[in-house]
Length: 402
Image (cartoon, rainbow, N blue to C red):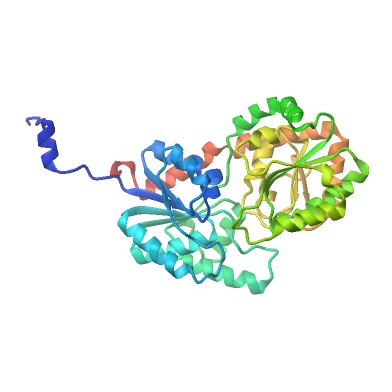
């Protein structure tokens, strides 16, 4: 057989090269793109997929564009019920059709619901859904839990593959017929363990920067919303200050303008009432989470609801013992009595007791922190998450087609 080589002008006459099938990741807010999804998007792009992302526009999407991931702005109300949702579905339908999206991968509750309806209407070939924590959970009244499960079951019929971050959500999805065993994967959650391990070496410099040279430091990473257990966190701090007057609470995070919970104002009032103003150091939202965590001695997360909290994994990778509530996700990460302690929900007294025990015992802190770091390295390295994700992507869209 003769080999035919086309000259450049002859290649042009054959027609323009067809673009690779588009993989679009959809979330509600820009911070989800920036802090939760970006490493996955970059990994998929580097593996050979044509990847873009979409959410409400904001500062967080700049990081995606800087990383070479195209961003498509969409307007999505964060409330579960909003008169704007039908318009959003129509706009998403139009986006999916005009961009010829091959795979829509949805995240966060509202975007996941509206995106799947739009994809069903647009006949998008493949729809993935990552459940970062189902909205229904064990501590919810039945009048809320049952309707939410039924909605997830209905939306599951519009989903080709479900990724759950926690094993408990995976089991619930199968039990409630939200997904079938062959179309569901436990993705888990992960962090760049080595980057946090190396950040621990900057401990003394960070403590000096924060003015925390001798004081014991307890850290919390997250948003100031009621379901993160902020009230219990502050009450526990007030109790601990009676035993440890120099104790400091390092809060890494803040409130988003779109948060439904007016927790920022409530937080300020509560801090003043408890008289703990001088015990709190805040950073606001930051890209230096690892740096700030390096200054801490103990990490706590007293949430009411979680999926598979990344903040705990970051603390474990840093080598910190963790005190967290005994709920979905947290109990998959923290081994009670080994890498930290699990405490009952809404129990500031027990929370303070466990943290005080760790502050009193440096050797216990060291031992639990080392065990947590080893567990993070073995089970929660982000590369393991990427590999699980990639295996499923190859099933639905082999790289030969891209």
